[in-house]
Image (cartoon, rainbow, N blue to C red; front, side, top):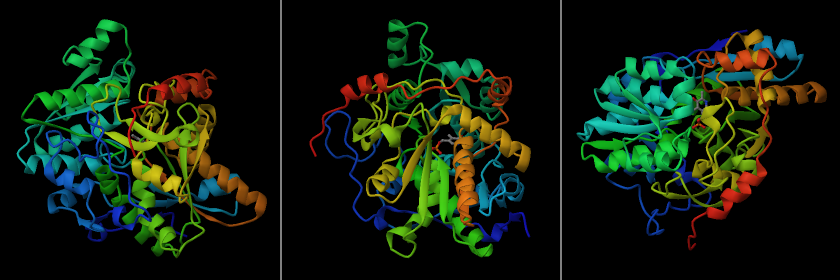
Length: 451
Ligand SMILES: *Cc1c(COP(=O)(O)O)cnc(C)c1O
């Protein structure tokens, strides 16, 4: 009865899995934010290699040796069997989780940060710009830039910059520069501050600032932490490992669960499995995306063309969206507060290969505390969404007597989110309903695109 399924460094996958050639219908190509015509990623923003990966038709893409070597700092990651949680829930279900919280920044995000830093360095770029919400992406890219000796400027959503100083300190320890957004450093930031000097910022505003900065500086590229095809590609190292590990356990999952903000951690786990559903070999595989009830992109959003950012500088994507100028309520799961979703996940959702469920903040923290008290790990508020759904599915098994195999992605630890746990434990955690009126308003401002 092993609790952990452990891979050796020799077993670290050497290739990422690219779903694009295996999709049953082609992905709608992104549109230029100005002309609204089909386009590739704007070349002055991204490295060539990354641009190529975004649209690649190769099923497997070699992980460069330098990236593979850097992954070994913490990869392969373990799969755990949650025996204590199963016992506590008195369920015949078998619960497994892939634990991504052992990376130096504490989440799955360096899987792509390292690849992006490497390709930019190789093409002679000196400096990267990016945005960050709660700071998990900014700190992951700061870690990666320190490994590949690149400068980094991070625009951090102001409310988080003020509330979560430890993530900023991590970024600075790894050598990055971090400013609160909206900032006076960009034209867009200045404009926002002029209209509202007390603006607390949003992810969409910070993205606009980081893109503007990269456009204006010749030595700089922009780097994105989720949503884009190449980000999901880099994250498939999670699922490629998990396939080997589940085989070692002699199991194939009945249900795969993950939390989704832009969708990268969960896609990283499920894309290498969903191909079995697409080719018909595992027709009953159930794949559940867990999202916050306060920002329910897949369960309440419109499948439409929309900008990736507030200012309309990012490409227009066909995705489920709540409207690019919708600002979600301030739930603690900052990484899940995004108006859109990875086009690959939206496409698979539209075609019926994956499903979604929305969960309230109080219910996620209840699950997070249960998990901490059974399995020991204190999880990121984002991750507790996946844990909630895993627990609910295990309870259904208790009621039906089925011993289903449940696998969820544990995207990161919550060591910098203790104030949120404190609020929950002292009964002060606010819950947020679905802000329907705000979404209806935001959905009036979608760009018009001819199919
Ligand atoms: C950023 C983050 C997420 C959400 O981002 P995705 O791209 O949807 O994976 C989830 N969990 C953790 C711990 C994160 O840091």
